[in-house]
Length: 454
Image (cartoon, rainbow, N blue to C red; front, side, top):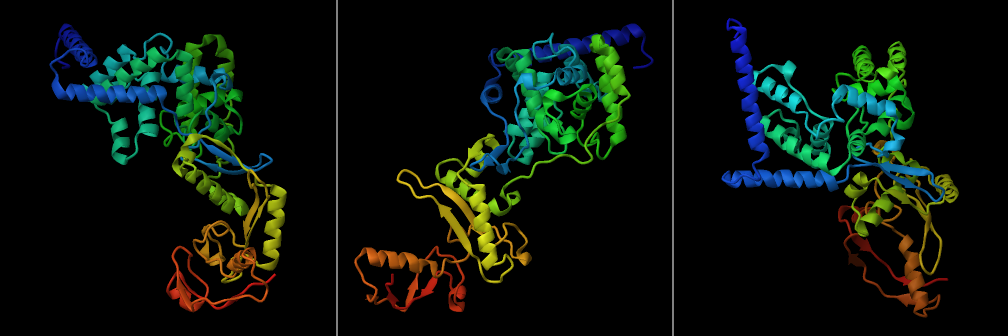
């Protein structure tokens, strides 16, 4: 190509652009123009379904479980994300992300055609420096398919594959997104969706993870750092590559000096500032395992809601606020009492207690505890068996005598009444433990005559 005259090179480039424009136009019109057969229909269905999910679907958020006083018991999530409205995101952040990722964001209709043609030309010619051209809308589509829609590794790979087919689907869905929402709405959705590294999803959690502040309080240099991370959260991680992260932050600030010159002085001053990140990422404990002595109750709440129709998977993605009846004072007293008589490391013993307030309409649980520590270290006597509210794991043993006696007294039996029972009774679902013979055959109970008592 280098030995061809300049005019020929220009004509070839023009021909390429015309060809690419024709391909794009035909591809975008394929649902309207007939004759493309079953493949086109299926592709159209894929785009339509994907666009519907983009418009109507929800993104995963953190579910927070609290006790009766509003104290956090546990956070349940698959992606650590807290959605915030536009007015809770600093303008510095909005300007930074648009400046570095899509400076013509306010002008295009969801697709920057100039950038797209350049990117496709780079793909076809094998020039990596000319690829790209993705708008905020297109990046939202790709991230939504990767972080929300994809359920398998194959689907996740397909969401980010570098092919013209995926790019065309992305373009059509981006155009739908731009027709459905305003630019401020799209920008807010984008900032609430994308990953900022270190398990932080969305701008609110990113601000907390790196700086310990809310998204509304981000200054110029902080916003620029976070905007720069979107390009590559792994290679630009400020905790493992502070020099690279600082350089990228300053690139973002340079683009802002050019694109928002009215803030040039403040932006130049921001370039002289250090990274200013926390010593360590501020993460959020996940699941009942981090709930301490309330871990058993946390498990119970999830089981209770599952029976009511809200699965654990839905809880981990739904961003709910679960208000419970657990009284922190009663819980502390119950836990202390149990530990006093049965330490957590006492071999072969699991002592449990639940405190339930009586009532006619409901029976709120005020406390639920076990002498065992809720955890995974079996050598230290820890367990995750739902001992306080289930027969799974260790059997209830002599606790049943209380209920047997109460039932006998309700039937009018006196303190001297005697019941004849078989010497052996086999049952299912009662766990394991107890006598040595019962351990070998779970669910086997050896019985004797039971005398009703006061």
